[in-house]
Image 1 (tube, rainbow, N blue to C red):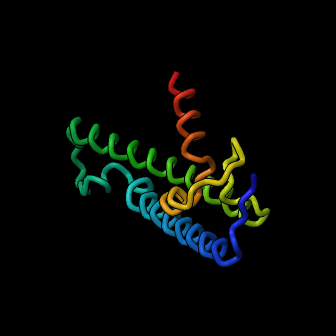
Image 2: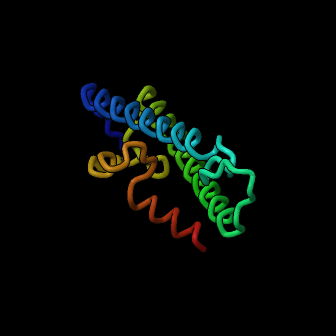
Image 3: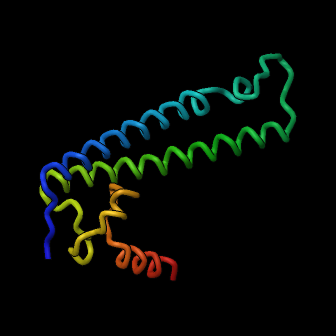
Length: 130
């Protein structure tokens, strides 16, 4: 059971995906420039020769690790967006990668890079949590 979107729908989703990818790339660049490229002294604003308090170092380290996690998650989303763009070009966009049934328009509006319909996604998440 295949459902093809009309050309206008596909162009809208493609534009939405490109815009989302650009936004996420800009966020990743900003996080990298603002946090990950600076030394711990620069991040804390301490340019003196005195050492930092251990709690400050731990806090800065936590913030850096948190930001690395964000960048990693955002990178995964960009890969999913790229996969969705490929599905648009090969005319399989909007079809569940598991059951090949159409993904609801509401789901694609919320997550334009969705690979699975809600039923299959829930099933996969349940299997992965076991």
